Length: 178
Image (cartoon, rainbow, N blue to C red; front, top):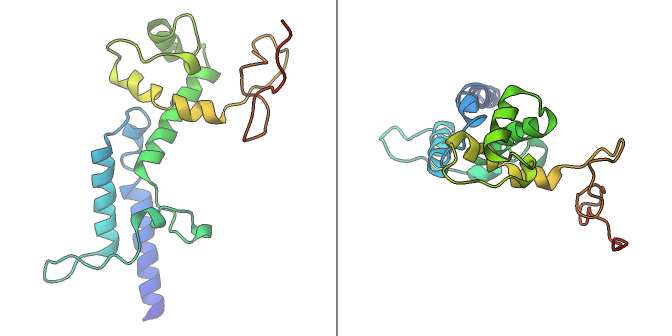
């Protein structure tokens, strides 16, 4: 009985991860989904995981959904948190704007939204498209984790750009020479 229950639970985990969480991935890689939609999707997965009582009532939820979204090695089941996953997918698009500026979509977005600057310093602008608003929302996430590769140093602003590995302070601590 114990092995059957464990294998049935593992099949449900695989079903949730491979189907229910994978289906909205395409939309989440381009559009920022509303918080209410992410909450509803997580509520549906939560109900699917815990099941329902035979008489139509609610079943007991033995573990908080946020705990189930943590990694397996920290005691969770490794389910995705939809909002975090959505921002991460949009961050991938933002990274593409930074790392591949010669791509057509990058040139179009740059010409419209940040013609004289770069993605990390771009403003939301007046009346932006929903796609730009979505990708722009990942700007904060990218700015936290991005580091420069020095190479020739022509494009580095040594005193203001984050380029040191210290997680608490990744900018120069000395004052610039006037």
